Image 1 (cartoon, one colour):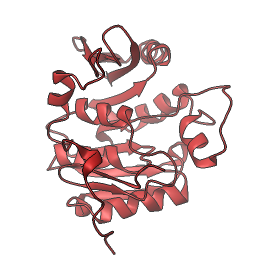
Image 2 (cartoon, helix red, strand yellow):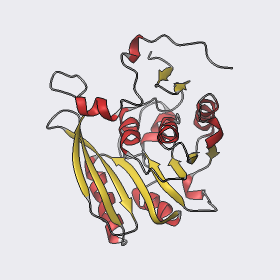
Image 3 (cartoon, one colour):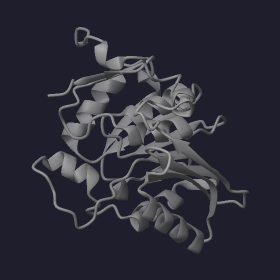
Length: 245
């Protein structure tokens, strides 16, 4: 059984037994997504809360709202927020994002959404829900996000490559714009994900590739640099501290 904790430089994720554990997708998205002037940030489907915590660290002037529809997972995320240095700037909202009502538009929205469709599911119900589309299709997600964005907002998403392309095409078809595309390769020629930045105003699209590992299986220097403000070196040798009360 893996560790129930994951330590970053400025915060820790505890109690990973419910739902998804800290994964590379969320960390890559958290490393790339950035809007320095953001004052309001929304994390859709926060899971353990890692993406919301990364956004809080990167944007010290911003308030973050984290949405999670499952009560058990929302409680886990709230625990992680409460025991972080950013506890005063992160709010946990337990709801389905399709039912979420906001009184204002967010400057920055981030999401590591579910993407499996018509795949066999495993035995862990919460993990299945986190990974399988169910009611949160890309169309539903994009429509909801558009309603709570203003002209200069940015929406950052990570999807497998095919779904990412479909997502971009749907956004463009509705009059939106693509600001950035990052091709995420596991190794040099193994493209596994795309991180996309979507906006509502005309912009020049930047396209780049991030390779996560060398052919020998080590983290690449570019990935290390991306995560240098977050990752501890040799995390696996750290012992779990006493759980905070």
